[in-house]
Image (cartoon, rainbow, N blue to C red; front, side, top):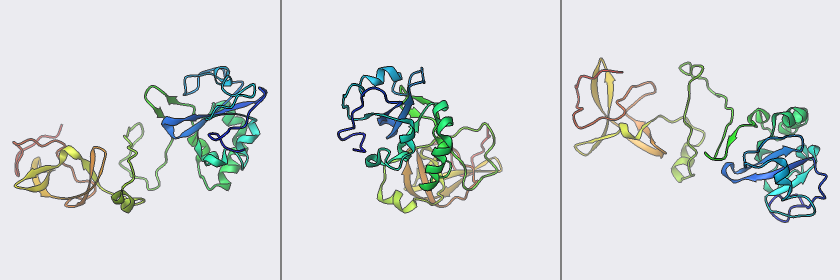
Length: 233
């Protein structure tokens, strides 16, 4: 009875909101009847309603009341409130006190502010807000960052929750069968042997050889050797 995917409950057509699956985000969106724009699925409330109203049962779509969103039974079969990735700002503001109370019950600090009304179906992206648990003074306003969500492996399980040092994969060079990088010190390249660990997309974990803050040449070619003069652009 409380599932979005398995025999979702039918609605007569008087529902206030529609809950719909967003596969790209592994979550759901919630759109209210008053919202006149398009959702991240590229469909408006009226267009989505054809998959819900009149007793129609469509897995992945559910017609609900606004207050049901903050219920303990809200799509409990699929994980409940934590699965919400998008809703219109007006709806979030209207439900904010109840959403924050429910998020507190679930120990989801800051969860409500992470639900932002910005998504791009063409790029399969959903904007989120993040905070720093341990702030680094080198992070400045307006800086951008690239975040990769990787498939879980045995090695990544070992590093989960730990801070790891990474470098671009292209910074690693093989010299005489050894894995090395070239640090930049006093405008010269310094060949430094390293031990690598888990691969994170286009980045490699460095387990030995470098320290946080060391500068390396991002893509050393065959002409780069120990002592080569370099100029930082």
